[in-house]
Length: 381
Image (cartoon, rainbow, N blue to C red; front, side, top):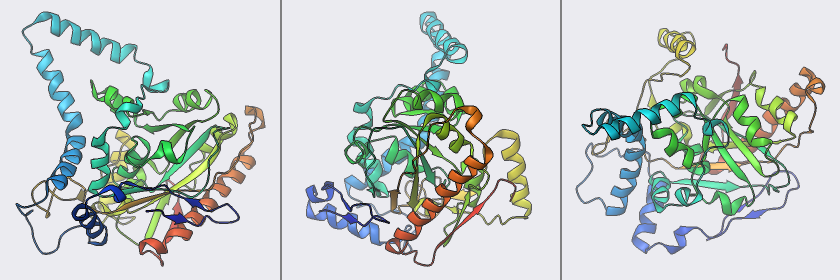
């Protein structure tokens, strides 16, 4: 099966290679197609039926394991601390000391392991929703890139699956691009969990980390979820996508300093994985959430998904397709710091927002969002 995507402007059409749909047995292929067309949450039952196929159960297991992994790592840490073997306790304390005072890999490109990213496990993860990655432009590996992911959603599961694993074929679609997905520093403070994330290619989302990766040379690239924690508060299933981007220009400055092209990325379906409690601007709930976000550095959206064995309530995401489109790169010059002026930053920031809107408008009708719109806001709105 091939899928042709017509790119905007004069760029050549890119034809995607065959995917694993062509290798499926008819029953599984039919089940996947019906899953894509069906609503995200079953409407005719509360509890999952007993005769769910094994491949659906293993998909659910991968998602459950992902959400439990930080807690599993914390539990292992407690077990090691309570161990009666003092050699084990001493070794673990030495590891904690190294992690707190000497750990540098989150800022220096991480511990990315392609064999780990290629595990069949991640394909099951992608098939749960399912998640698809669409290439609309060639990205030659003769320069570094800064990818911007939109929208944030509640947890950015599309960004994780597409760009921190090979489940959707990133290395085949974009050969020569060595990408690092950046995330919050706090994730690397959990024993063992930081190593687990780093093997997937995740790094700390700091200026130091960005520059380290981009300065390694052509093809070395980073992905930022630009809306950040604040944008998760606007992750509602809606025909209006509210993106916190107006005053977020630091990525443009980093791009100019490293001569890195900017690449807009948009995921249809990211905001549909959970139902979030209404929190319009000015509401009491929104005011409390903003105060918490400013104090703790992360947002606290009040949301619900589905459970493990029932569909009414839980922390598991709903089965809803995510289609991620990688757009047209915006080439930036490499400038010295004294040459990077606010006017130059505004110029390329405006070009990025225009390119993201074009990408969105080109493919929104394909995913039932013909009337959908993007609204750019700043952090104070």
